[in-house]
Length: 53
Image 1: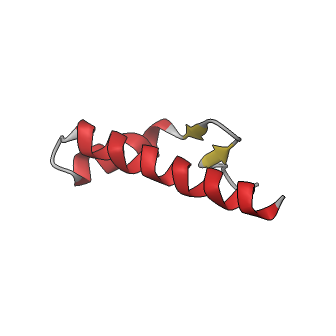
Image 2 (image 1 turned 45 degrees about the vertical axis):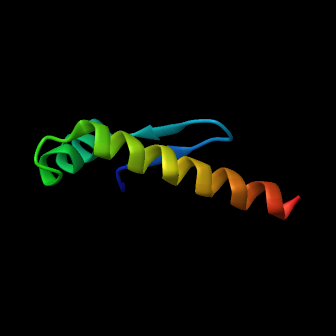
């Protein structure tokens, strides 16, 4: 069975811990950058779902 890496709800991104820490490592430990990217991702998804209604 495939492992679920990310779940997106209307106001949350639930993300696999390994995926999150790998993103922080790739950003050379800049967790603030990763946080900003995740916030932008959630905003983009939220905007997509609002336009579908």
